[in-house]
Image (tube, rainbow over all chains, first blue to last red; front, side, top):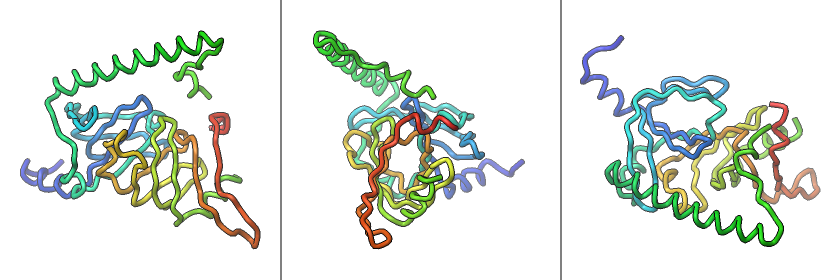
Length: 133
Length: 96
């Protein structure tokens, strides 16, 4: 148990933030409180960051417990590098809308691709089955 | 064990790894473990336009299960010639 809310903020300013890439493509950013040999993680004051083009939006998620098998990459955020980023932060509504538009465009082009392959007698293996082992 | 020994010999060298989600990361190999998890320092993303979220990350830990390709470098090895390029397929991780 700790002291006043002021000191917690002071502590957090010097604590390194971590970025976690999950297998489903999500990006989480927060303070890493715990890690074990399976890469199970506990993240504090977590934020889910969505990137579309040069814009990004942060959705606050609170405390996250991540099962290690879902972790692809764990990186330490360099606070100096983060402050001079060329990216533009936008509101949650805006980034979700941009993401929806991007997903739609991707689905369209994927449909065309599958159609073109079908016409040539080929089929693409479904991506979600490739990870089974 | 074979690839673990090979990776250990590459510690300190610059490598490029490609993850299963098509993200390519270039960096200095800091350490590797028996599960082929790796730690890279001074990383840079080879295609920052597509993956901007890594811009502010300098060091990272990568789960071995997320790797698809690992690019080493040309190096003279035991007086011979060793092309340090390896491709991994999911079946290799079957034992884990």
